[in-house]
Image (cartoon, rainbow over all chains, first blue to last red; front, side, top):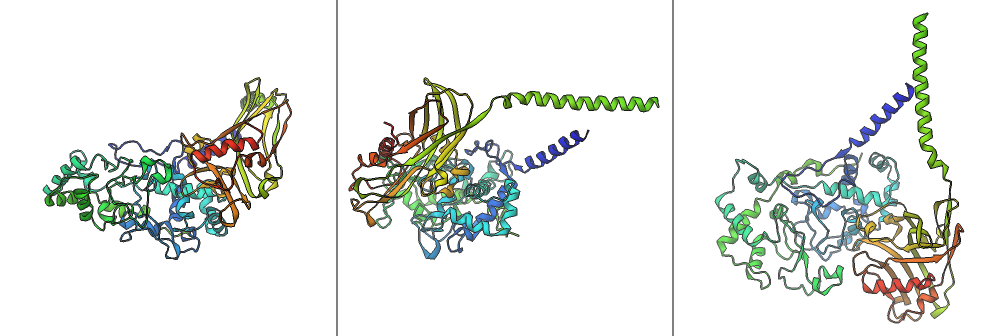
Length: 327
Length: 230
């Protein structure tokens, strides 16, 4: 009988542990995420740890910047108004900080797909000299000295050991939860929806489907490919894009098709942030030679009106994603 | 009184059933105890380099996928073994695993580096933790082998040479598998002779290879020579 009680108690304990598992919620019309949640399920304690680390300036060498510096929630998890990303000591990176959204569907990360797995993503900005200029080894040493983190690591992983793998994977867990699926567009698309596009938005939507949807494919508004959209090479940056990773000349000047979700919030645009607003983006598409789209002024206005329906106020205001001070 | 006896009897049945349950569990777990496992060790030794006044500063690499074979038949495999051998730390010179005792084998096989499937699934703990300095961060993926040092022959800054060999995509996959003859011994000494590697290298030209690609694959093939494999 004693044994039975012990067995029962241990079952209860185990089931408590399982209960920490969280399911990613997204509309049932969406494709399955690319991330393998069966192998590595979301876990509320790991998400919380990741969220603390996302806002932790100790990740940077001089303790001044966190992930959130370049990925602000209220502007769709990007750094607005800055063409290139900013690091410590006023260092400037070579690309525009990308908006973090619906990353569970992403097959690779970064403008050139340099990072093939989100579990390893956090290591890149931590170690990039133009960003946090730190090393993951040093981050682990710093966090180990901070007693407040012992408890959080314990709750997330079952012991207080702080490792590079755990730091990076916890940040990945938090980033995987950044799902934007409550824009006006999403509400219009729901079955029997009362919410309708305006006439201008509707016109923009049909123009979008005709001209843009091949790359910025619904419902995630990207097809996760790499494209050359006809941007002239910035002679200062000399950025060769995807080719820098594959060493393959056919990948020269290709950059990842970014998602357009929350795009009205995430200016400036393109991998080097060269366009300050959507008008400039559409001017580029209607004038370049590589990927030219025939658009009149009214068409451009309509497309911009449609793009604004991809803004998800609930996402940028979601308290689950906001700054969480460690106790 | 009768009732008490009855209850005691019932209790006994319960106790004996618990005992039976215990016996069954024990019985079921016997086979795993039956086969004794003993340690098998690969010991790495680095010969001193004599060519081109070379000075080695860093030499570390992963050992993975250890296999023991008897006449080309697989008799033991450890797919979970990823051991970082780092010649700046003498506590890491040995890769060990447990194999069944009385195992007969006449060849040993292992790989230098981290295989493509493991790489594709992300990052790991232990020797594979990214804090070990064997994970690329400007692009993702494990570094199979790091060899760094100086030689007056290198026209680089401080006469440095730096080789970071890695990559896991098709066409640029430098994972090398080594095969050694063996004779049932549970310790294998492997002597690494980097001179054999450097004899194939022109340090005036090939001195800095730190990205995946064809050059890294070529380099990994040359490195096999240092491990006494072709």
